[in-house]
Image (cartoon, each protein chain N blue to C red):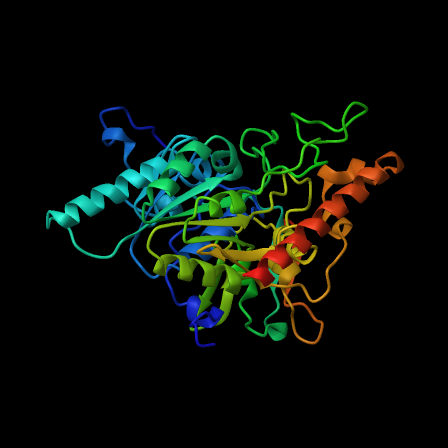
Length: 310
Length: 97
């Protein structure tokens, strides 16, 4: 492979997120972060919004990060890293610092889709040279599985519990990758840890582009998704192959699908192993299941059309 | 471990040593242990890239062993292992057995 993206080569690199972090066994987020950092060949400074990743990788006197890393509150990871990036530019102008440093922010879906959206939107609009990485596990997992605007429709969470009143979350999820692209930023993409080459290519591409970039990565959470501890990669692969989480990028307004599943699987394959969708398999929710499949189908068709139009 | 007083802490509780989480061993969380069967290993390194705990030791592009000090026993490696001729190279074994 000409890209240097072989596991053999990558395994020789230093891992910038160390073991000893206290994310749950089988969590998808550290896998995503590790891949992002492995694909980064520059010195990097990161800010981290409050969330599972932030609290579990930096407890009290321990940090699992080997890069300069700043903890920020839930709502301002993008604002914090914009400040750092601006300071770096200023110091460079004054001749006090030199080098090519990349700026990144990490946030979960709560800190990105919901609470941190205003600061993220601001940073993207101001055009800071940064890459914002969202690991999307589809709810506030850290505080006990409360719904977020990234929670899929029909999922059972503690704040939209499935029962006789509602069959899980009644609303559709937000498409943040497209909202970010609508900021007219140079690069906005979606990736999955199961397709690591695709993920790393996107990170590498993003680092070479000047300006604000956004990368949305699916990160299965076995506690919140009510699945097994060993299926984070399997589920993220199914999310891609059912087209629930299509892999695509929007570069300068041009949409490109980066991976088309050989055989598009039915959405139930993705939902079946997850306890948060268990209630949807009851006969009374058959209609909702049909609607969910139709939504995925129509979103995928729409994306394909956008990709063809360029 | 004796807890530090406020005078012992750095201003703003800044951690000066990056990656010092390695001092905190998470291996005791494990209920199932991955066991490597060398003869079935094709050194694809899927276990290494998919491990959420960086608990797979690789040297010169070859799988060496598991780092049981940190492995939490999630079993992703065993599920993703393609093995050789349908024979898996990683098996999950219950701890204490």
